[in-house]
Figure 1 (cartoon, helix red, strand yellow):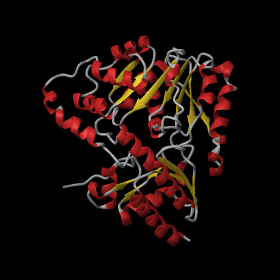
Figure 2 (figure 1 turned 30 degrees about the vertical axis):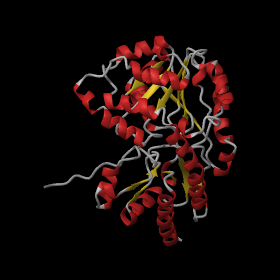
Figure 3 (figure 1 turned 45 degrees about the horizontal axis):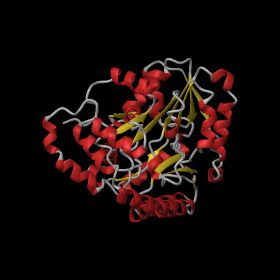
Length: 373
């Protein structure tokens, strides 16, 4: 039987492609390319799935009243301001449909590739505002991303009727925008969409979410994901927080029952799992520091400080070559950044995993880089 080579992925987490290249089974791949919590899924999620298997024979509640009530309780916000979705990617689609109605949409780049995909689907005009990523040391105080926001502020006349699509913490740099830096933008743009997919990796006292401003700014939309923090990408679950009129409009556009019943039940369970949440925050501080220091010590690698569970690394060698050598030698998958046009082949991104797994990555990189020098 003829075999076909799989195309280079534009997203992380494609272990089928990686296994094909490495010549092993997908279960043998140690995946650093997808920024998923290695401590999960939590037992509360597994228990919720087992307890709700019987619900598969029924259609979900199309209004997801119980799930929205749980999210309402979690965020101290009326449920009419919350819309669950089939991952935050689905909700990004409807946000992009609205952004496409505006003359243009501004995006800080490099940016998550799905932003441009979703905007292109509705023929939106995207204006890229590139960050200065020439010096990884700048990441310590977020000077580069702050400069990016300042450049947006100077566009106030041109952008008064335009949209803005941000993600915070920023992907792929891992840098955290402050609420104070975002606030002036809400008065400068007709519609501001803030993707906070990784915000829950920060403890509550460190979060910079703008969620509470939604009730005061009808032009603000906040997108959230439950799949990264709780390690549930296969279930597909996210939610949007926005003005009820906007969410009712989105509801009319999309297919019914976009969230399956098991995903809804799991969300209702994990949002109250404070033990798992604290365990994750405690793990991340130490594991991220260990991985950052280990990468910094390797020749030719320059990691950027990060607020979340992934690190962007600038390298003096081809990141694609590093990726393929790691796969073939060690069955380790890192995320090359070729799909980020502003970065190209001299950057890669890695998730923070357990200390033992991080050490395995560092050992593999050490062997390959020593052979290059």
